Image 1 (cartoon, rainbow, N blue to C red):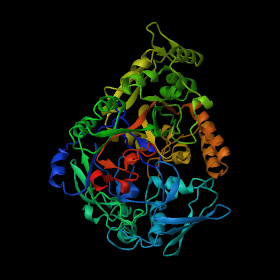
Image 2: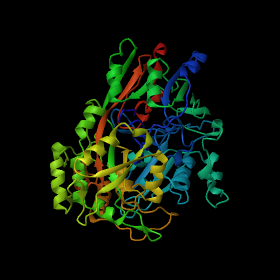
Image 3: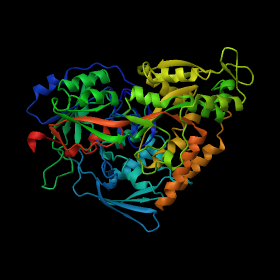
Length: 599
C-alpha cells in the first residue's frame, strides 16, 4: 500500500517478515500511455510499482510487492472478502478424525504454462525437495515446523491426483498457512537445479530463475505468465492459456489478456500517472485520498476503502546480549537500557502517535497497539483489555526515574552511572520528511538524544538479519490473518525474531546469546494456539500473547492507516481487501477482473 507515511511495503503475504514501510526505491520509468496506446486493441490492465522484482523464483522471495500473485497458485486459497479457505489447485481435501492426516485431491486436467501436466508429483517435489529441504533456505519452512516437536509433515503421493500429508501433531493453521500459502512448483523444470551443486557446494536452485532469466523460461501455474521484463521500466504478464479457472458459463479466466506492471520512480510519479490516465489501479495514502476524492467523478474512478491495513509499523530496540568474536553486538551500556522494560515502556509513552495520525495520515488511521493485525479475528482491542501507551511524557519520565535514570542541569537523561542516554535509530533513506524526525522530537522532550541514520533498506535488512549490530530501527510487518503466521517472529530461534535474533546456520556464531522468560512464554503460547481446535480457547491464547507483547514491548507499535485503492470505472470486479499486502489487496481475484466494454 502506498501511503504518505509508509511509501512502500516489503514483506511477504503469508509469512511475517521484514517490511520497509518507509522505502521508496528510486527507479526510472516511462509514460505507460505510450505502451497502452500501442496495443489498445488488446484487453489489458496497467498498474504500477516503485520496485524492481528481486527474483522470479517463488521459493526464494522475501519481499512484497512481488510478482507471484500473478504467476503461482497453492492447493487452497483465502477468499479476500469472506476470509474463508477455498479450493484452488486442489478441488477438495479430507481431514482424519485425529486431525493428523490430510489428503488433497487435485483438479483433473491441471497443466503448467508449458502445457505439461501438473500432478501429485509436483506437489510432493515442492514440499519434500524445496520447502523442507535443509539446503534451501526459505521463509516457508518456518510454517512447516509443526508444534513442540518442530518436525516436518510427511508428504507422499497416493496417485496422480492425490497427495497425503501426515502431521506429527494436530496443527490448526495447516490449511491456511501451508495449503493456502505455499505455491506449487514444477518438478520437470526445477529438479535438476535442486539436485545439482554450484561451485560453492550449494544447490544450483539458489541461483535459478533470477530476474536475469529469460521470462519465457519461467514455468508457472497461475493466471499469468511473464512475457517480458525491462529493468526499471516494466513487467508484462500474458494470460496463461493453460490456467484452470473457468466462470459459471464455462468461459476461461482470467478475462484480461495482458497486465502491464509499470516500474516508476516514486509514489509521487505513480500518482501523476494515475491522474493522467496512465494507470488503471493505484493503492493510495490517506493524504492522497483527500486529493483524489475531489476528482472522483470527473476522473471516472472510484476509491475503495478496505478498512484498517493488515500490517503493523513499529520501532524496535536490539535486545541481543551476545558477542561475536569477543565484541558485544550492542554497547553493554546501551544494552542495559534497551533490556530494561521500564525504559521501553517510557519510550512508548513518549511518542505522540495521534499527532502522526493527524498530520501524516490526515486522520485516516488509528494507533496500533498489537502485533496481530486489526483485520484478524484474533486481534485483541484496547476495549477488550489490551494495554495501550497513549501519549504521556510525564508518565514516561516517572517510569525512567523509577528505573534509576536521572536528569542533568541541561535536561538530558542520564542512566544511574551518569551516561547520557543517546542511541542511533536506523530508517530507510526515503523517510526523511515524516516519522523519524517526529520520534526524535518527541524523545528529546524526555531528554533522550536520537541520532537518525538514513540508510538504504538493504543495509537495514543486512544488519537485522546478518551482522546483528544495530541499536534501534524503524520497520513494519505484514502477514496472514491467522496469528501463527507470526510464529517465526515469536519463536526464540525463529527466522524473524529480529529484536533478539539468533544467527542463522552458516553465520558466525554468537557467544552469550540468551532469551527472556517472556520470550519463551510467547513462543509456547503460539505452539499451544496452533494445537487448539476450540475457537474460543484459541482466541484466548492469542489474546494472552498480545498482552505479553504489549507489556514487554519488543516492538513499540506506531500507527495503522486505512487500506485504500482507486480504481478506474472501466475496470470491473475489483474486490479490494486489506488482508493481503501490496498489491495482493486488488489482485487476489485478478482472474475475475474485466474491462467495462467486455460486460
